[in-house]
Length: 111
Image (cartoon, rainbow, N blue to C red; front, side, top):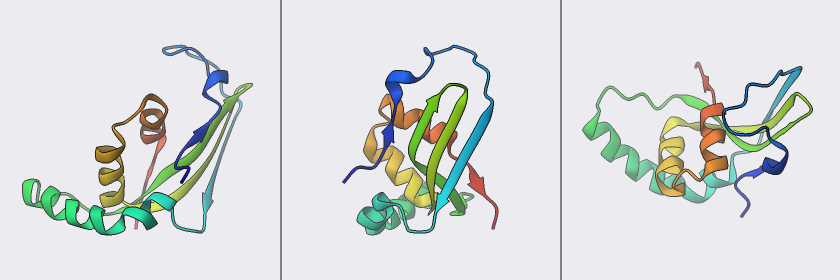
């Protein structure tokens, strides 16, 4: 299962400020493959998370599946997932470099 794709080799060097001429984020209608595969584990983890931090809210957010950066253009494909799925993804994926950038690029969606 491919959970994240990028053209990382074409990205500007870490810490580089670069002009952005266009941002295209497309939200897929289907569930993220990670959410489908890990839904039950994410729910179980959520019980632990809210026990430790009762004020957490399991709202909806975007979890990127692809990010392409090239020629001043950022293009991404995202899926709407519960915050609990994102927390489980972050915990289990170890936040590899590209995935960490993906996580930072994710956005919360208000109900």
